[in-house]
Image (tube, rainbow, N blue to C red; front, side, top):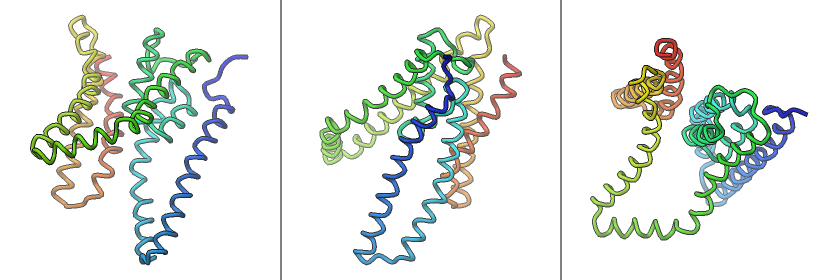
Length: 245
């Protein structure tokens, strides 16, 4: 029996886990509404908050759908659907899957017939790696938070610099991944410039969204800036690929 990355049983298994996560969300939503009533919150305001929250989850949902489609070429739909519905992001999941495939001599975006062993290996890398944050946080989270608080008390300026430096360092790791194949240009391989061009297109679109938000004062633009940048950036990959590759 051949392995199928879109086998119905995989959809069932992923669906069960997603359903549990959704059930938790509904449970805490009901608890929050009941507690709001108990402390005398205005029900009209609660409904307005609920509607507003629902509307503004559309933008992140679009980004997640795009991420699932991106990963589905190699991994099928169930695994990306599960990963990005529970805990995960396009940047992390793509890097994890790409690294796992590279270790097996495969190229991300060109695989269409993974074996069961390869599929389990990739799924394990994607899942086990990101779980580090889940079990590590209870162990060091409180100490780390207290250290940051103490640093802010001693010198708020250096505390801000420290936190910004950590954030920039994290982003730099992913930015470096974009430029890792540029060296191939020296040998005549221009395919490494494709992610660089897409990166700059997405960055320009994000900057334009920021400028538009600042000029118009419409805060909702920031919620849709990410999916807009993703869509336009991915669309730009088509002409860039035809031109450079």
